[in-house]
Image 1 (cartoon, rainbow, N blue to C red):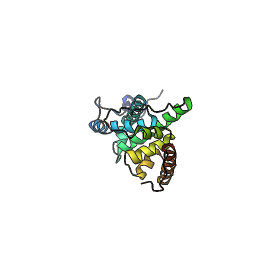
Image 2 (cartoon, rainbow, N blue to C red):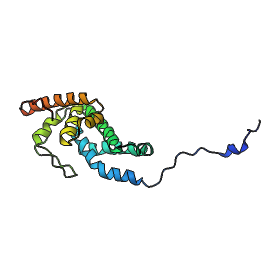
Image 3 (cartoon, rainbow, N blue to C red):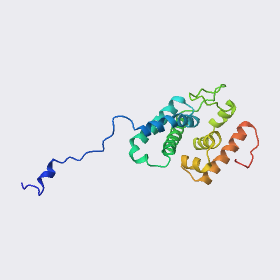
Length: 185
């Protein structure tokens, strides 16, 4: 057997990138600042506090796993929110296929971050919407986000977002016994 040209290279072992044993301070700050809002947004899509927390944790786990790459994004909080919303939509679709959703209770559910929920009748009507329409209604009206951002978060174009919003408004109006105004603002 012949010896390689550079015998010193035989002892070189490629090293994987080393992560600190402590969470990155920037990640910890981002997590502390956005986790409650992400959980709340996901809750409006899937209507289960424990599942919303799990989906949000999964999204933040993905963010942490790729933090070295994602930390340089302009808004990593939007990336994690997009991932959480998409996971929530998949979870809602699975739940819909698996079981028939139960009607909302007469009292408004408790959300740990102290946010006051809208009228229970409105929450019940929002629950009847398809997952993508629920997400768009929550982000656009309840979180007061611009449609361009809402569309980006749910993975559609801005015009498609407005179409989903219009369809959701028609369904909500029918469920609540009100007329639909053509102005979506």
